Length: 279
Image (tube, rainbow, N blue to C red):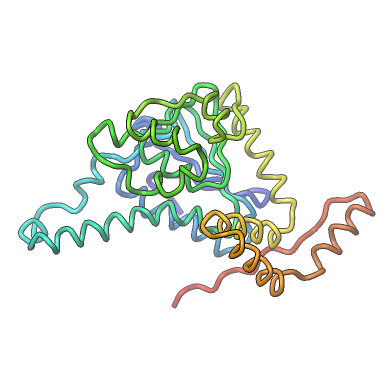
């Protein structure tokens, strides 16, 4: 399938979603918000992919939300509607936009972000929903919304304080300054900084390949537990992992891991079962 904003590929059990509008700095036009969750949902439902890599093209990762999104509702009937109803419709629209990134956080396979150049506004919302982030030396991150007189609203603030120190998040949020690559690495926003875009993609694909070589059920369980622990107490997390293991832990993958090690070969794990399509 062809998309307005993305090139999509599946190779060696790694799904690659790549922004393809470098001439527009990969801004997030209206099509972006429906295409991304559609692509992620398809890979997740199929069961063949074991990791997702999100990368970009051109000078910048993304300039963030395109101004066309703010006016995508158009004039017409809504302009004449009662104020409460207009505000309720706007809230619903914001929730729809949030889902475009929440699908990454919720996906049963890990999502790796490879950032070059600027990652601005909505780009920070996006990478905050990914499992891991990597970038080039020239990369920078900016909570741009404060610079245009608004509050970031599609994922940065619920997630970023779980990744970065509170004081740093507040500084970035209140000032709108750029966070350069090396500072981002030192603060823990990115795992590694690469010299070039080519080295970045090669490095991130290598990490994704390591993930793809592991038991997909065990990887899914690990992501599920880490996300749950982020949002719940230690006691809740311990209780949930006990319940998860009771149902999900089966000896087959462990037996394969030991057999592969003994026979000095790569382990071979079954894919996750495809998800049933909604009627």
